[in-house]
Length: 440
Image 1 (spheres, rainbow, N blue to C red):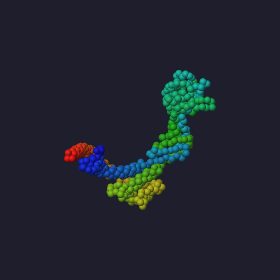
Image 2: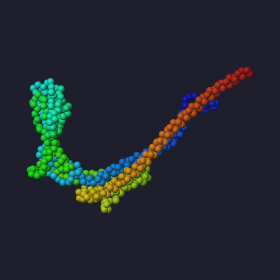
Image 3: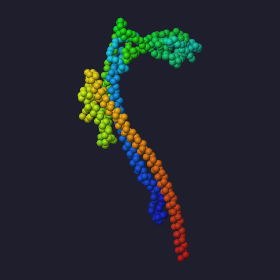
Image 4: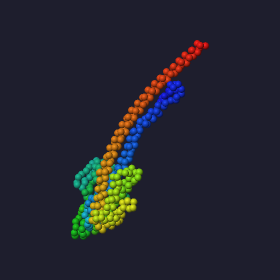
């Protein structure tokens, strides 16, 4: 007898072979697991469809986001600023009113620079240092800087460790080492005094603010503006100007940001075209969403929003938007830019009030209604199937345990019968031999 099999040769009085109980149980378990395998196949199918719906949902959300960017009235009033000087950069936060203004940059902001020469003993503070350094900021507040040594390197490290809005480095000059102390920010608000050195500090660059004059460069009309940095944020509401050099009679123009609007329209058409292509691929013959008519409807709504035309029954091709032979939505940025420049209000009405509004409605209905409901339904089905599969796993474990116990008991019983058969056979042979001996 061997583990996992039952010998039948002795029981049957011949060589009837063996029953492989391990294989037998495996085959029985394979048959018992068929219902669970069917549930697993169903779960795979449900998950495949759910994944496809999530992809559709993501694409339609992209359409919704892009459409909402164009139905926002602020998108069409956004402005951009340009400067007439290469040394002055102007930018708009999008809220600045269209117009122009002229100004001059009369001075630039600078950070204070103070140097401390090394003494004849090679130090900037006498050794051993006793009182440390004292820094007075622009508000008159005193700050103590403790020292551990008087060398240029040690003092520079102590100044930096104090973190008081100044930075120190050791510079090797033609006349020897100096400790150079620089304010971390430009402007008079970052000016400082520092005392406690054994040599005399020298300020080689005074802290100063940037100044600009808005109006006539001769100062006859206008007003002055001061900034602690070379960036002015209050020359014109919503406009920031950064000066890189002194400049006279710089003109900043603020106008509708056509490139921003064009980019938003391009993003909408790109999102709609991408979504349409994805929906088309998922609903073709043999595809995962074939036969789901709500998806067909979403796909047709995307092209229908363009095919329907403007509110006045005009074609969107006037604005660079069209549908090609393969039903792909296309966009020509140059044509759109020309239409926007020629008729800003008409372009806004056609794109924002018609096309973007339709696409926003379709995408919103899809993402918050149709697809959302389907995803909820498939999520519930997935949960139910998962629980059923888990229940079957528990059930199959119990079935396998029962089969193993059953065949183990059978194996034990047959082994006992085989032992008895062997004993009886032996006794019969002995009895037959005794009988034959007595007869002779």
